[in-house]
Length: 88
Image (tube, rainbow, N blue to C red; front, top):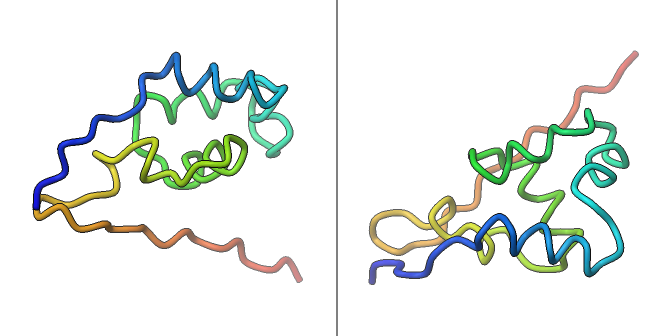
């Protein structure tokens, strides 16, 4: 089975965030990032940013960006996110 679903259009992602009462800039800042950092996720693969946006929208990241989460065989591949090291 090959994945034939398309990624959400960036305008649809931004609209979904706005429907939840926020903006991409505000979400970036709330996540401790620079104001435009999450906008990179709209055009480039970045699992951490994708998960932040997906949690805000309430939809799994692989539904928003299927091209980033399904391999050539159509199998779901979820990347492991790095966890920050504890500061001692």
